[in-house]
View 1 (cartoon, rainbow, N blue to C red):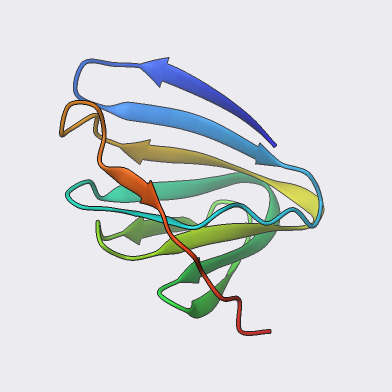
View 2 (cartoon, rainbow, N blue to C red):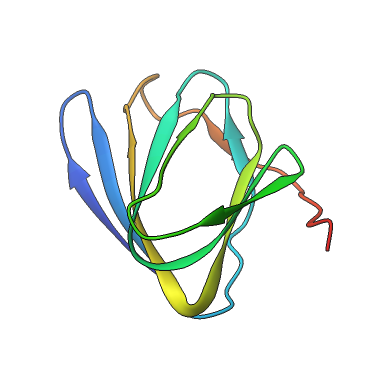
Length: 101
């Protein structure tokens, strides 16, 4: 997994790259909503215990308190995550997540 961050004043844009089959850790936020845009590969996203398939150019809006985690498909997964940098210092925290498969 690799991660690139572009530092903007009020907007965070990150490129996340996952190798085939890799599952990312689950997290949520207190205030920040996010949008994920799939730019390569495929995979799945876990949103509050519900699995959704991800394909090229899918866009997923995620409310702040929703627990989210991703899993790369057989060709890997690359997506752009868009959010804000507010509150200052961030508000994300890691949480346990059960994949129901």
